Structures are given as structure tokens and as C-alpha cells.
Image (cartoon, rainbow, N blue to C red; front, top):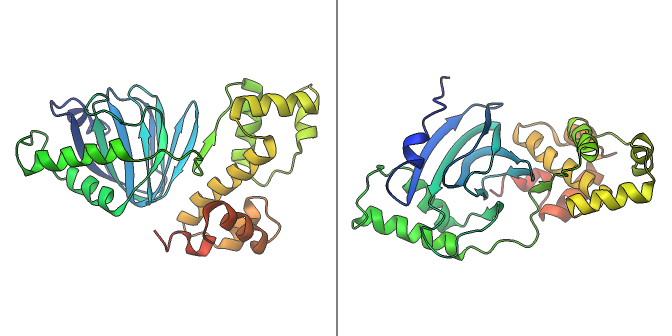
Length: 261
């Protein structure tokens, strides 16, 4: 499959305050680090996207979308076949747009508006039905509440030593190295390690590792990996233990997660 890496340029440089485009990607495709002149909303009708910035990592299933501020460097990786819909939005197009990078809930109405926006021409008439649709879409974004808890976001530390710990865990989520052992490896006390980790990520080391395992497991589930294999590969002793933690965090079991979206 040949993918045009510059296909987005006409959309984000268009004269209209909001534009939409559609693109399909195979499993495993990675979009290298880049940034946009406008704010961006990424939504996948199929598959899972992994969006990474220096602030953290978002795992995005089809009931959610990621809002990124203009000029934020990011990468996007595809888990499963991904049908992506992207909107480019002037930050001052309407009052009330999100003021930080975040995951947003995609309601049935917002989903249909995004899909329709991705079909419109770049030079749509703002006085026509197309223009009214885009105005309605902007209004929806200005009213979407930003969740105080972002269950699909994994915060990332700015400290280089702590970052190496996080990289190791994301590469080997079943790693059982304890906070005490990490502290010894970094030549600091356990208390200092825990304090620095929470200062940089907002959560404790134990909470971060649990969240990393859960979000990484979503990527494996999207690829059709058997649940028991996902559980063992992500540090859980059994499928039942994994299911209990998963349901407590996401509100549904692993077997039902993608069925319900």
C-alpha cells in the first residue's frame, strides 16, 4: 500500500476554519514525528491508534478521539487496520475549544458529523448546508466536557532516568522489577524514586505500571490476540486477574470491550 505522507497539507492550509480528511492504514503502520499548524482531532472508525507526544501516550479506541493543540509534535501508530478521520481546526474558530491535549468521548452525533466532514470539499461554501454542518461540528467541540480522569492516557516523565524505566516497562510490560529495585538501579532511595515519579507523572509508580499494562493490552486485543495470552504477556498471573483489573478501569470485560464499540 502506498500512502501519501503529504496528503494532509492542503487540508490544514485551506482557507476554511475547519476541514476534514479520511485515510486508511494497515496494521503496524507508523506516522513519524510531525506537527501541524492547526489543532487536530484524530478519530478512527476502525482499529486502534496510539498517539504519542513528549507529555504522554494515548491509546484510542473507536469510541474516543484525540485532540491535539497546534504545533504539538506527535507520532501515530496503527494497531489493526485503521480507518482514520482527521479534522484540522483553527484554534480561534470558536470559543470553548479544548485548551490542552486530551482524549474526548465521541457521541453518535459527533461521529456522524466527523464522518460527513471528511467527505466535504476543501472549498465548501460556508453559507451552504456544508457550512452549517461544519458550524454545528465546531459547536459540538466547544461543548464537549474534558474528563477529569483520562483513562486512555499514559503520562510520561520528563526526567531522563525515569523515562528509561518507563521505556523498559512499555517494552516488557510483564517485567516484575519493583520500585525498590528500580531505585537501587538509579542510585537513589525508594522514597526519592517514588516522590520523583509521582511529581513527573501525577501518579505513583505502581499506578503507572498498572495503567501502562492495561493500555498496552488494548493494543494486543485490537490485533485479535487471545485474552489469556494478553493477560500473561502483560504481567497478570491469570485471565481472571486481568479481567478483574480491566473491568475496574474500563467498565467492561476484555472480551466485551471491542464488541461494545
